[in-house]
Length: 203
Image (tube, rainbow, N blue to C red; front, top):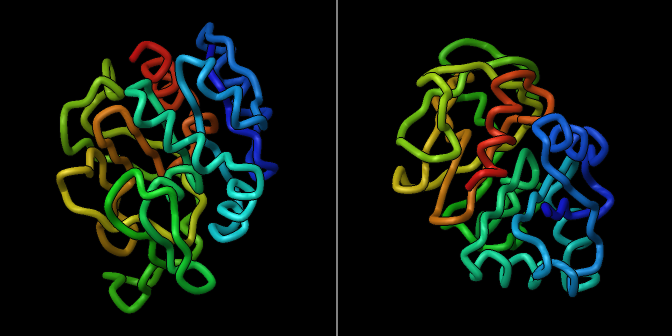
């Protein structure tokens, strides 16, 4: 059974539906004490980083997620959920994250763009696979996913398993042992996104 962390900041219905489409059972979980009962945890998210961390800290869910990650069982964050995996974010000031992956989250730097782009980055874009990972099983080396974000992660290439170009190259998928993150929305990305969801259920 898969736990989808419910902290009132995700498109939770579509996340649950995506798991159902690949034949997996998932439940919304808001009680941190119940997280250890599950085989996998999905951390979704839409909105602002500081608000999300405040919600997670309000009942101890932040510590429960850290403890789950230490158990070695698969954990995946998507969109804002991926950003929360990092040590800190610059969104609305400096804010501490879950610290599961070394690095930080920054706003798109429009001064670096190779030609003008709108922020937020919204719509379909290519993810370029950087490293072999079981999360990419039966997927091509380049494929399209759906993005909606104004901030992106900055981390060492050691953890970057996928990158995307929007004005400049940025990290769009990460892995540190059993912890995975995707900046795009797999649940909104049709066949390729559902394949990521399915692969997560088989880790």
